[in-house]
Figure 1 (cartoon, rainbow, N blue to C red):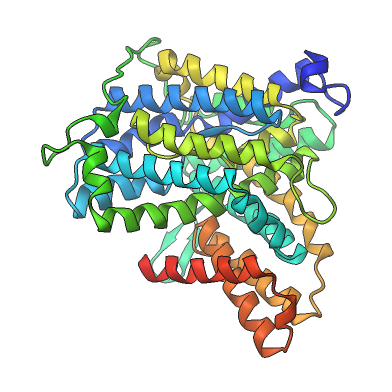
Figure 2 (figure 1 turned 135 degrees about the vertical axis):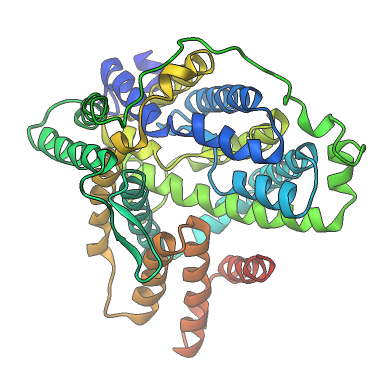
Length: 437
């Protein structure tokens, strides 16, 4: 095991990897409840959505660990699942089988781009300053997710965002998880982020935040598997309807753009914490990561779980010491168990994971010193990424704003020659993507 996963070479051990895998799982466990609740609006039975979510995450996370040997975990991505439920199946009226076919098509399209080397080439064409900006923006985004989930920050009509109810149970649990994470990390306690989650969840019981499970085992329902090959609401096979409808193919392109750059940003964020990001901002051995992630998107559509993608919460496990694919395999095993034990797993409140996510956000801010803010071509587009990711609540939107701004600033400052050909392509693709939104 040590030889296969290179544990000693990366300064890790089995115990650390197992702990990191559990930390990642707990940070992601909310998807077991949230994804089915969203997909139910598309007409997918809740039990079937739970099974598809857990089994899909388990298979693709284990595959990521085996083939990439990096601490990255996969599950149904937030955002795209909402598009499936509320746009494709909601306002547009397509059956969920057709919507899942669209997801499978975009996954296959991304896989083709990876195998052709285009996805990796675009990543290499990104200026170093923008790569740092993506890492910083992801840090703020991760922290924002944690604070939102704990109700520490809330929506406000007057100010857009405001401080939440300090007397609410979720707020208290979130603050406790942050304090515990900082204190335990400062004391060099192994598994500080994991302990922060567990203790905060326990404290949440008397506060009414952490529910007591009413059951232990839940039945499995595989009725959504093979969704694109099932008959849709129109009576046609979902895949046939998706392929023969131009509007749906445009949707597949838009989803592909989102998946394409979300994964790029996530990989960089986790690589920063897992110590496999080079000094010039490149992710080591990125190709197998991209291949597995692309296959995961298609598998998510096939299983009826929406697009499965690499989760930015994986950075919590990497920050907790995960350095190899063994972390991912452990996370995958927990997702497999969760398919049967979802009533218990789902009791971990998202507020309890707040501390881990906020602390990871803090760690990722270190890249800010590597940016030359006096150079407008390097500084301003980077700022647009840093601000764009959390403020639009979208990794791909923030990256797109930065890419387009970089091209514009390079043109007006007479530095067009610094723009690599694939940056032109990426900026143009993002412009089209925004126009199609």
